[in-house]
Length: 344
Ligand code: GTP
Ligand code: NA
Ligand code: MG
Image (cartoon, rainbow, N blue to C red; front, top):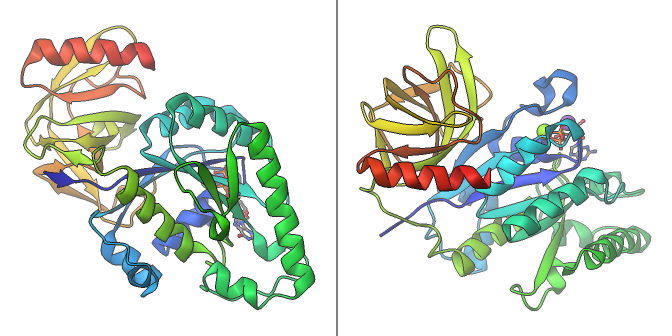
């Protein structure tokens, strides 16, 4: 049985640094180019394990984390108040989540909203306390691990950071979660790790990545097993008109295989929509799916997990959030889809 990449959704209040964190991991500048600095769509990026190992250097090897998963599949969500349904969609898809909080601002309305989404779907999550570079007196150490950088800070700065971390611990406690700074956690199954980071300098990001890999491999392996030859299952992120392609659907495939020419079923507001795939476009690894259509590559088939753009006739009325199934046994797919639709 093949293991797919875990889908990791990044959730949090507006401007707390979700896109900047993913930019650091991708080596990209998506956040800088967003209109008004606001994310307005769900994003998806595949980070292959090789890239992850490069970012983490020998950090992962030292922790003896085996790299049995092929990578991490990140979902970026908008934090602005207007985008509740997109946050829910991002939350529903996640195997794991990162709840990002600006350490200097603490919990804000969409932080609570994100927590409620995580509770609703029972998604395991890590808390990232971002923007540690803004703590008064913090000395930045580009790309360093949190522990390495923390050790080199003045004692007052260290104390200030811990006070802010304990504020988050208190807020999480009010929400019914036990948590600790990650290096003080002794039971990862009952305590949530808080990882202080700076998304701009990369401080703490090695620990964050290592933690995601560790949790995925410890707690998620069964959930990540895929049926490589089974008809694909997925979710529609967005329905988009693209010049020259007509109406397309951006989708996340989380199980099975999908091929050019396959019959698929999706949903409009009330009914099943069936169509035949005209082409499958896949972004290159490390490319943000919502970022640019130039960097898509036409492929014959895709095995989960993957983010793809599908072109096909008859997609006009498909709704964002719709389940997507490759049809083999039509009746089964229909029943399954109708059942899933009730959960949207
Ligand atoms: P939405 O998607 O619109 O909810 O925002 P976001 O959570 O994706 O935040 P974004 O990445 O757009 O960052 C918001 C602002 O914070 C940008 O100006 C970033 O450059 C800045 N920022 C993000 N992380 C850090 C950090 O670690 N330190 C500092 N100093 N600024 C940061
Ligand atoms: Na923003
Ligand atoms: Mg963003």
